[in-house]
Image (cartoon, rainbow, N blue to C red; front, side):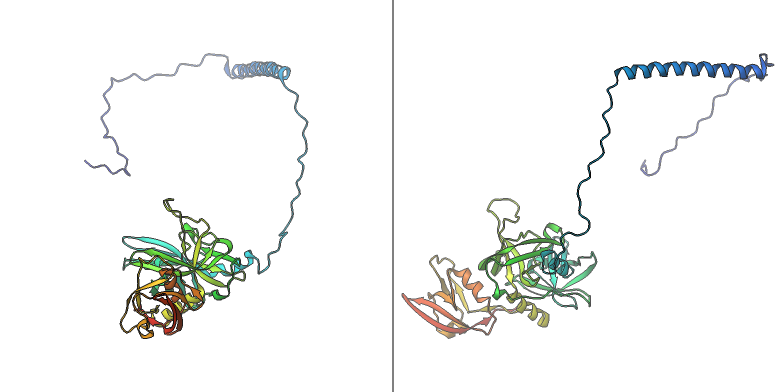
Length: 391
């Protein structure tokens, strides 16, 4: 028999046992002192009770008084000085002023799928609903994923992916809004080590988190992601705390302009779950701007290439060409297998990763000057960058 836990059980009624008849009881006639006597007895009782209570109270009070410690004199509370109002007005160019102005343009992004879910950050690019974030925040395997964009005032909107570029780890999503406030984009080529940096995002789901630091290094070659889905970033390094969930949020300069897109952090090997150790990396805004503009215009963005496969086993200075792609820019420029590229423009190339990130600071169709070694002789060639397959 099943029992509904929300329904209390009721016991079945049982018949009462039969009892022998009882003769009616007649009240006896009252014999006593009458009403006056009742009132008199009540008064005497009250008097006696009052005397006993009074005597007991006197004895208890006397005992307490004999053993009591004299009370300390009451001392008036000493008032403490406190300012009234705001004693430190904040200018628009203070950290607080900048953050107050830009927070409405920074969003949290929640992604839910049947098998996996995640969260990250982003920021508004245009008033008509275009938002920039990292590719790894929104682009995972579940085709039926739901993207929710949460604004600083708590309002939510459904997001859809406009396009992505996994080589740069960037994505543009869109919400159906028409009066958003976009952030102003700065110039990452004008940065100097030591400049102020402000990171805003939703680390560990804590939306609207602000951290402050400096630019620690520029042109830092960084690879992020897993095998088969690796992004190469010519990164801005900062000590402003960046944690999981900051991905896709803006890195700002001292005037509140976007100088980078927070994307990766360095963690200690074997240190368990990753967290900020003061080594955060952002995609320079100049590269992000080009990718975002192409995605908004066409739904995809191009990646520049020189048309070679690099020899990743090479451990000396430079990037060694393993194979030449037929018909590619390097073959047209006269490069051959085994050439070691040691410079691209003014940038010295120390390894394969640095060559890749240096190339990705340009756009397809740009001319670049390569310096390379062949047979112990250093040579120079100008090639025009090609385009990798768009995604």
